[in-house]
Image (cartoon, rainbow, N blue to C red; front, side, top):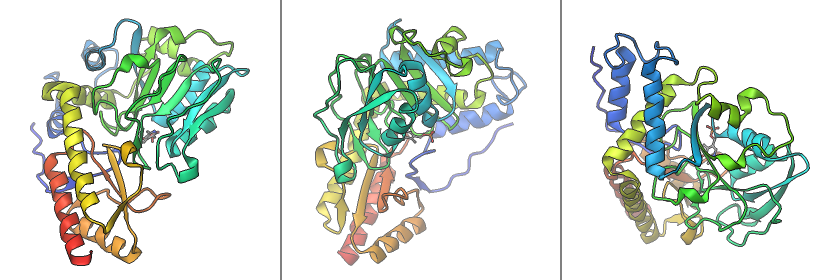
Length: 363
Ligand SMILES: *Cc1c(COP(=O)(O)O)cnc(C)c1O
């Protein structure tokens, strides 16, 4: 049975879960009915079958190729969202009498700090809280003895992004949930990377983790088995039933990224989308951008119209035009346009057309 995807002219600027490539949706639809001609749905196959093992192996192999990782690194697909990792990272890496360094650059990093402080000491290595997290602090300070330094590479809510990672002698840990695989990165700089899949690499319910093995096993704490990275590595991400469908969608999305030309191509598309949008915003005084120019995110652009009535009118017009997900995060307000890997340039063009015509009427 073939599923005919509905063709609707929506422009999906959702911040997450967010737009996925059409070939991924098509393939996933087919697999719901009949996975690889097995006569079973992907939702019905056993997670210890060779069929699923192949899905998992292919997903891991794609990650290793895209990130150019060597054998020092392990790739895991684990349950939960990035929020689970806010807890699981310090549980595995931070002893009670030790200190971890965290950057306080936004709402997600903030939540990570809160969880880490349940397990050990936390020092804030750099904060942009003084200006509502509208920039990335570059001058970080923390003790050399810190167990690791944690950053959020892209601040999904505030619309800032690290364009140059901190240079450090201690293990670097990153929440890359909202800019994973959006550009080439020297991933070997990191000792641990985690990303919830639903922004740039799949559907909700699974985390991808990349772990440099030498950071594990140095802890006094006893770690519950299901939370223990080392045990998950030994079990090859199959300690218990993994989120089979979410792993499958990640595998398809990773394959799509590779087929489209990999991270160089993704990076080019990200830059093109972001330049078009920010250049348009900068040319229209009606719209106020919010963050330091050099720290602007290529994934999430946040901006305002000072007159709130007019801003609401703009949001209404977005709705009428079929633009989904452009209302700013509840604590920040304003307008947020998310431009993940699968967003076509035509959607950004449609947005900039509306920005220009709206400004011409009301500017
Ligand atoms: C969305 C997001 C999270 C939270 O992800 P959940 O899957 O909802 O737990 C954490 N960090 C960043 C950077 C995010 O964008």
